[in-house]
Every structure is written in structure tokens, then in C-alpha cells.
Image 1 (cartoon, rainbow, N blue to C red):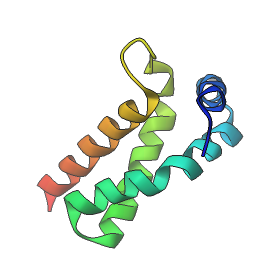
Image 2: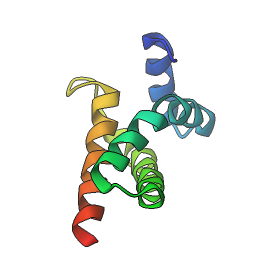
Image 3: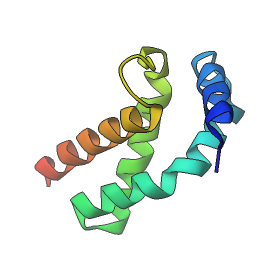
Image 4: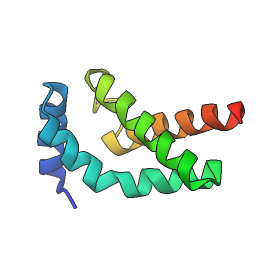
Length: 91
């Protein structure tokens, strides 16, 4: 698990385009975010696809994250939840 300081450092690096920092964040949070996808979608394959789609969005929009609006985990959780809900509405 990443410490608070390690996470802050990873966020800065991700916003600068560092893929290794992104991998660290993925390794630390993908399990919890996958669980959220699975809870909403109730299908393992669909949940895996949605998790992947969510992390693409997290990477793509990482510069829009600001710690003044909340924690990085909450920001990722909202992206993942919204992506899963959108996917659920399509099935």
C-alpha cells in the first residue's frame, strides 16, 4: 500500500505523464475499484472491461484532479462508478 507521501508523489508524476507511477496507483487501487465495478455490473468480464475503461479515463484526465476538491481515491472512485453506471445503462 502506498503511503500518503508516496501517493502524492505518484499523482504529481502521473500528471506529468509517468507511466510507472500510474502502474503503482493501478496496483494499489485496482482491486477496490474492480470490486465496485463488479458490485454494479454483476458480471466479471464486464467489470474487468469497465475497470480498464475507467483507468484509461483516469490517465487521460489526471491533470484535472485537484487535491483541493477531495482525495485522489475519491476522484478515481467517482470516475469508476460513473463509468460502471453508464455501462450498466447500456446493457
